[in-house]
Image (tube, rainbow, N blue to C red; front, side):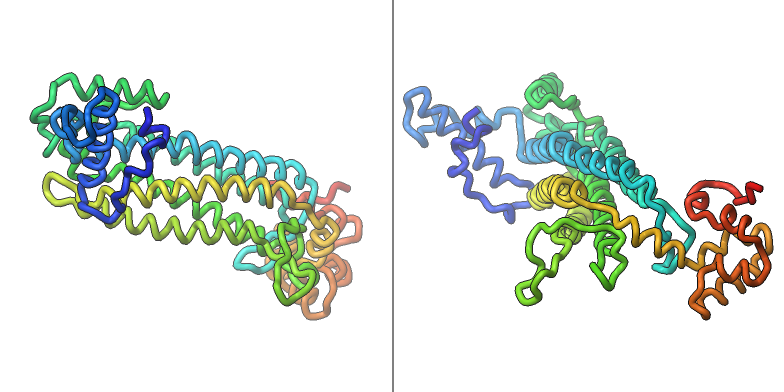
Length: 391
């Protein structure tokens, strides 16, 4: 309990860059526990009345204990840190999806004007990305829930009571509140760390989703006068040390940087997990370190992004509606009625002469003013179907 609470943290001096099995860290823990136990029973530190190997490490090996700790800490951090943080982010995006449902704006593909969309639909897409990310993390739980404990040195379970893995898994489950079980195959569990690689890949996808959202919001908030300016970002801090009044998308850029760090961690974990030789993978410390670094920074930035940026966003409704009115992509809704070529001609004429599609279509006699009201209704274009005149 003292070790878990952090009371003895100053006694753990081993660096992450050590023997690949994590034996240095395991023996550090064994010795600290043994010495503290000696103190408790009134014996001298180092007396080994309670022995680090014979007692504390009894029936165990670094080769099964370290990967067990890896799985427990990885799944705990996902369940208790990452997923709750992503739920906060998802909720923030969902609120904006509803709040912005009535704001019609220009859709964009290839960064070029495309058919209309609502700002709410954009945020709904972001919400679904995070929702699917949570499901991806749920899908990797099963692999991480398998514990290598009981395999001892090479997976055979030598010097271990046959019931120990089940008893230990049950105890760990009770302590953490997470359902763990004995590994299906102890040889696989110690020689390969595919579960860690798989789970971190899901974290990388989540970070990538957040990065995409952050990039989009930075672009939509660009300006405020000479950019898209479709949303108004919060003033988290002065943006420039030299340009007065400039506001930067600070929290969105924090997400971008976390994404790059997670990609780096993912490369380390992917390579490390693939580098096992025969009965043992020798990259355990760095796998654990980088995995937990990713869960920590993803959790932290997701909450900050939600509470300090997304929650405080406002729509620039007037600018959105003005831009969509001038979009040449509105001609798309005319194609089913007058054909692609005529619709394209209208769009080109509108661009060359700096007119709206509506103005050119009426001038060319392709549709009446009454038809234009219905067939060029940007709001109606945000829903499935072919726009017909309601007359």
